[in-house]
Length: 193
Image (cartoon, rainbow, N blue to C red; front, side):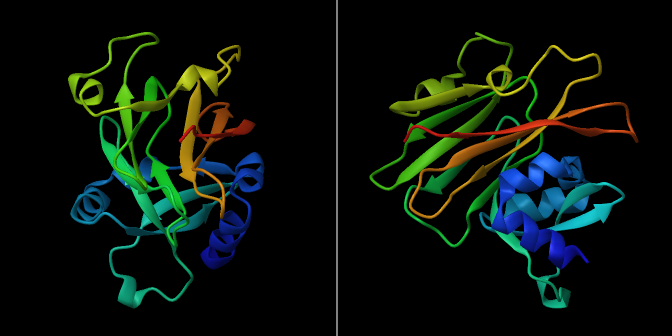
């Protein structure tokens, strides 16, 4: 049934995230991490886990029979280079979206580089980001997530490239306790490129 989740997600990512708890921490397990670091374009799959959808990395594509999601991965503390033109790989998944700031810088005529820097609000910019070039946009996690909730704050995020539009940051705030999480809200914000 995961192919249906992939198709629903691909058709309308914001609507999907408004309805289904999106779990991305499974992408950081040992096998997935090796696959993600070895390639710039990866194949992903959503699998149902009760009311949640877990994002996984497909490393044996030749054995896979569904319609995978293709895209990039932006690890915590890392960076990814994305095309500003329309692309067949319209997603860039982030592992988490807590205590981070995304920095977008120009990387040539038709590319941007997005840095995912872990930091406290108004913290210093890392030397790597400061030396990267012209900053086009900056998004702190608290701009997209409400801190006025009575449960632990959890958030997931991805970058999505709609055809003819700029990359868009789509975030989902999850509330509740482990095993009883639900979507508090999902937002979308186009990046300034």
